[in-house]
Image 1 (cartoon, helix red, strand yellow):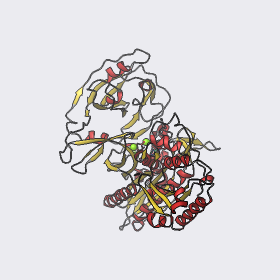
Image 2 (spheres, helix red, strand yellow; image 1 turned 90 degrees about the vertical axis):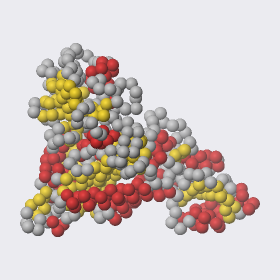
Image 3 (cartoon, helix red, strand yellow; image 1 turned 180 degrees about the vertical axis):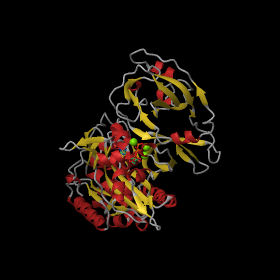
Image 4 (cartoon, protein in one colour; image 1 turned 30 degrees about the vertical axis):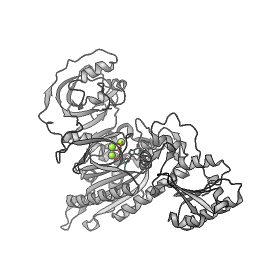
Length: 563
Ligand code: ATP
Ligand code: MG
Ligand code: MG
Ligand code: MG
């Protein structure tokens, strides 16, 4: 590729809206452009990186027995009603209507539709196990789309679904995928850890692991042990921490009816039923349903903030709270079946709490603008201890370490949750009908690209690992007016291309400083500079972006040195 023809709109200034390095650099280096909040164009350089990540993903998924398909993104509400998630998924689901006023959504994930596909195409135990995957856009109307590709509203995911006859089959499928995921992220050049996690919104009773790229900018907190393999996200670690069950305390609170918003201190005081280092989840009962309200936030802050104050509270609705139209936050199945979680976003801002929507998972069972403490009374609290660094590892007792991570993938044992709900069954050897046992496995392809930048950059720009670099080499003639340099650069460029390299030729009429800066900014792993030493000594320079190492080579040696 000739750089003079490349659509690479680099920026001089770091865009003000970009808070983290990957967002800044991908914008500045001309990889992405924002279209609307959380929705991006992938320009040629980004497209090439994505293609390389996808190629690695495809290779590993195929090797692991996956069959690639492509499923609809626009999905009928009926399927989501069958699984119960039409109600449960909340505002994160992009909903739309067709001209006949029928409800559809843009798929945030594909459990429903793949289960529908398989129930109508697979009947016999002989057709199992089956594992299908796709690489496609996903749509989630994230409450806070941010950090560029990291948390988009339209993003690229590899999602895969396994169907087995029994739990043992699922265990095997899960293990195969777990190993395949390790290979994918290793090949992408990432430093990562698989961590035990909670099932969250997708649900299912079985185990789950998240693959976390270690980075300070990560939104997830995790703990791990250097002495053994134990690693878990903090939510999971807290559930595993000892002393959870015994530690149930009564915290009677007065019901107040003062209108208006509370200050952070007042809200914190209300929720300060335990030390600031306690994680809490609010649970309340509305009619006969228990509703769990998660309150989570920035645990790094020392001040009392809602996020530091999570717990299991049983709340009773005050009788004078007005019942409003249904409105749900992102919701998931947590804990025992029938317990729904409603995020009230208290991790974002305290203001949000005053706008909280709570209620049962049913139409007309929701209240808006409620305030726990004002509108609820609290009767019981089960403390979940916050895990501290240095605490003994639950597996081996060695001191635990903490880190921040970016979730780039997750593997789930779904079990029969969706197959039972949608009637996805097979006939066994005896002609008996059984629900298929499912697993699902996601990789955030576009997020992986951003996460790679979070781990691979310096003050000059991105430093791509060779395996997913948009181009492996850039050839830079110092002066494109110098015919000798241009001819040699061109020849090296052609040779490298012939031997299978993705090569960029900087044939732009720019000063050498600009060319070098851009090569560093866009992060090409190797740079071949054809300058004045060519005419005098027949020599060109090879520079390694990552280490800064430089080699002077005869121009004929470039190919053998690079290969
Ligand atoms: P998160 O906890 O960050 O919201 P998630 O657990 O909701 O992610 P999954 O449902 O497990 O995400 O989806 C599989 C993968 O898709 C995630 O591991 C992540 O890499 C990617 N992903 C999820 N949400 C987004 C998003 N908004 N933007 C980009 N990638 C995403
Ligand atoms: Mg999410
Ligand atoms: Mg997650
Ligand atoms: Mg996840």
